[in-house]
Image (tube, rainbow, N blue to C red; front, top):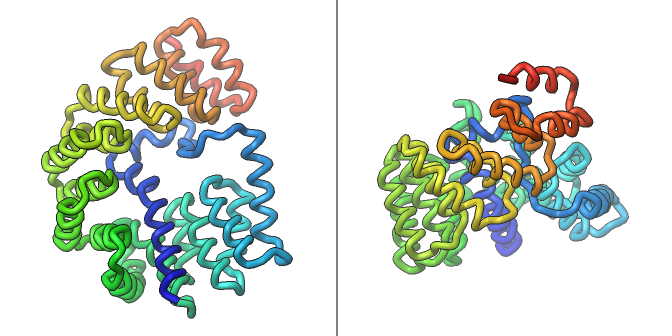
Length: 349
């Protein structure tokens, strides 16, 4: 029975960097929303028609009781990539399913949603009778331990102890990295650091070990040490976009924003199709190089097509008297409420 538990927990650990690294600095939190309050999409670059058709298929399969448990579970795992209202309905139903495999997969499907929603959906599974499901639920929620209320933290203690015990018995390096991450999320930073150092001694080519080590140092307030760690990592892995991204966020915390802008631009260039990286590059470039900032915002919108990133383009256009301002507002007006357009119009110089 241990093998399925390892598989699901490791799947959650692979999804973790998408959230954890994106939230490891105040800049990511502050800039992940536009002035409209719309959350920036950190998604995958697929065409809208292809995504819509495939998404509909997965949503249907996940809820179709005629399908096998494994087919439904696979559909739920895929829905983690495409969060929307239909996906959410399928995930909620999956979390209540009689099949343990489906419940376990639904935990993965719930990953993109904000913590308060995930807590309501997933916390009942902390007492699931099936061990694998309980481990998956604990792995999903423990990352937000620092944001939990005292009551929520108390509810996490026994499941977390069980998860730590389980991971401690695994020899797989990926599971050992997850164990260190669990210690970090549980605010046992010393134990986490010792495992990261041991893993780095054996393998200096896995970027996630470096990223987690730097996150652990930042959690301790050791931003300068985190910067040193990331620079060592970049020296060995110069083309890893996430290392440059993490370095940029660390530099912001150290109030070295001009250097941070360069690091973020490098991250976006390496990642190429990560619209969120381009968006943050625009945010950091604006005080330094307006033309570069405009190009970054435009690139973010070209990649994602997301309305909040079109808003960001129009916003920087209108504040700087760009010649394409009216065309941008006309395009945004097709999808945004009138008050949003009026608010932007009020920013004209």
